Image (cartoon, rainbow, N blue to C red; front, side, top):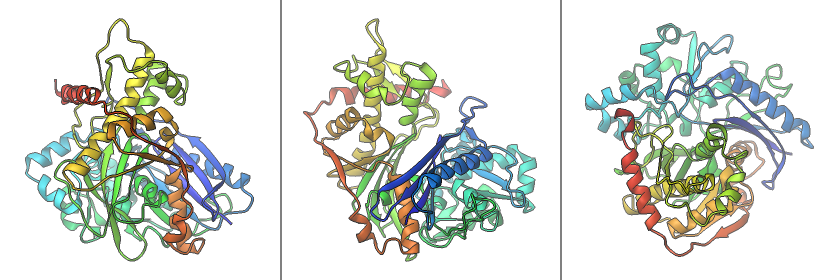
Length: 490
């Protein structure tokens, strides 16, 4: 018996077959293209995402010992997707969470005095990161598509609801609170779409998905649409909340950091809607059918993406895994500081007009120094967030649990422990995003009976203890961030 988890990330789709002991018995993976039509714009072709889902799931199911009994979905959040309710074809590219084109939309709403009210309702901020700002941009700049939204031909959603529609051959249009809470259209206290926010952003309620519990009924897969499989879709959560669930952070105060395309630090705040005036986000963690649990989050936009840029943009490494050995070949970064604001800066700075910068270059700088500076930047960005959690939000973080692809990098984990001066724990299972989706689906279908049972599946791989404090590098980082700020305006 196993549960099929579909992890539809920013650069590819991972499919996992998860057994009752929490082990992965089969997996599949497919990348899909990234599209950058203009500076600051990031787009995906929804059809390419769907084809990657089919290919990854086919690979996993064919390799598995038994057919799965349920499906769980986790996804890149905030990305705005539009599709035809009948044909399920997308009339335009999806606008990805990293996309900055709605900066002027945000600025206009801020100047009109809406920021405080939006933050009160949503726990978020007016930033191009979030879905509603992208939809407002589409309404203004793509009238043909928006006409279809208004007349009911086209549906709106995030990647999870698009995949639910594709898996069910269009029968179900649904999302969960963890994804809805990232749109700027969801009221945290109401646990529903907010009429006030819908009016502010000009989004018709009828175009949006129904909000259902994260662990529950999202319909069944259509065999003709999905590999001949007729399975319950029983779990849906945004990728970072799914990772929190997959890390077994079920109780208040438990925290994790996922190193993915970006890095995301979340702490479980239980039934308390914790708010931070210092740049952190309040979000729904999940809803198991008995009401939402909440989390406080620090969202960092470019960490794995920065390593990917070293590989694909600068071509100074051949593979992301090469970064560990190359960075270890030098004792430090040689004074080089990299601010990877490739799509602006997220928490706690929230500067969409910051841009990536390299400081401290000399004739002696090598590619090894740049790579090490990149790993240091990842650790420093996480420290920025954790410091705010501890200092301003009053949330103790005695230990950080890490996951995601870059968590396999021992040097990064050691740097992280040292800059935070707390232990960093790495589980044996690093693909906790997909694991969380499987857990949510399995809870709803009886594969697991409780979160206590799920917690017993977590196993430690390695604990990294902090080295001697080294604050000079962090001070240089802070100075570099200040200088990178607002660069797009200069």
